[in-house]
Length: 280
Image (cartoon, rainbow, N blue to C red):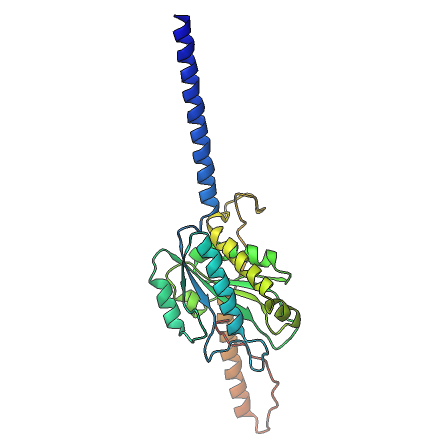
């Protein structure tokens, strides 16, 4: 009958529309889930220094340990609000040994580790944002965090760097160390001492944590960021540089010793600035 046939076609059309709407909704949900990849993850936040370890260099006016803790606590709130499980290596002004910080990170097999620091230098003009990593598995996390922090800060971009800091070398999970500016730089120190800037740092780091799974691979044909990906950052490998500098230092020391033995006259020496491989 024509009437029944019309009703059957109408019913089939209704089912098709409902199916398409359901599929569209599911796709939208999947996209939202991929963008908010930090949801449900365990993030170990490490506020650098603490307790008797003030951080920075002797005579530094702004205490690094206070700035790192404040940013870490703000980051904790931002990540927790987005569904992340957050673990703090310290949540107060206490000293936590490096080994303990690493042990906390390694106790969560599916975690990521974010160590927050501020830089310092004898030269007051030194400035900028740096992000460190060590293992290959940590590079996407470092790329994402650096992309947002360096892009959102008014300071210069000092790039992503590979270096064997203890908390990066000994962790069994993806780990990064973020240097959020130089507290010995008057301009950057002034920024760091404002609550609004520390909040912005926390939000940018959180954006990097959430976006770590959308970092484009090295095989990508484009390095331009879109709503779907974050470009993989180039990095400076300072692990090889450090080794070569140590070798040169040993050779020069041996040559200097031999010259002193050959000469009876006192040899003058030039004062050289030596940088220590510290944890930020």
